[in-house]
Amino acid sequence: MPLSNKQIKALKSKAHHLKPVVRIGQKGITENVMMEINNALDIHELIKVHIADDDRESRQQSGSDLAAQSGAELVSQIGKTCILYRQKPADS
Image (cartoon, rainbow, N blue to C red):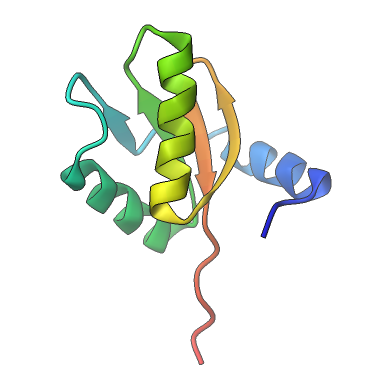
């Protein structure tokens, strides 16, 4: 379910003070990186990820890939940092 502009703005303001909880290095998106991202999303819902790649297009693709593989929404991607959001499932 895509986020509305109002939701995106609210999530960006919430994420502003956050530090990246996962850093993606030279090896790119590995199975362990995806496990860490999924764990962080399960706990926090809203996280920042740092992508250490100098190629802009590659960083953009990595951000989209992270969102798709984790089932999260890509809230924003500025420079080497992307913000991911995945709502916790309702406990019923």
